Length: 151
Image (cartoon, rainbow, N blue to C red):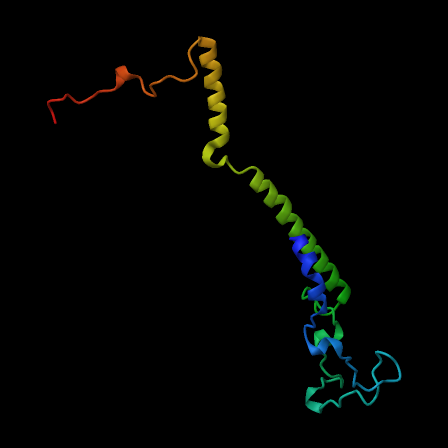
């Protein structure tokens, strides 16, 4: 695969995926005096209906905490720690308990039991001086065959 890729790489490197990749993008946003600071012209006037009894406007939790993870609405520090704890313990529990559960699952198809039983039978037959396998799976003296006249 790598040899094929090395043969066609010079051709692939000359191909342009789109005309947009070769063009430059220029930002059209106006520059403010301080980077990231709100300018008085950027603030939106608040209607009296949207203000509470103290004259403060309602602020979205996403505006107060732009890194909101959904664990605590008001405090970004608690939100971040709760997120870290939830993911750490959630993933740790999934890996540790899940791995332990899979490890202690019963023997699928009883393969290990069949191996142990075969080894036990081999040792028993060797100690008794019998062959490991006989030509008859069942003892022929215990098989009851129908008489030839019944057919």
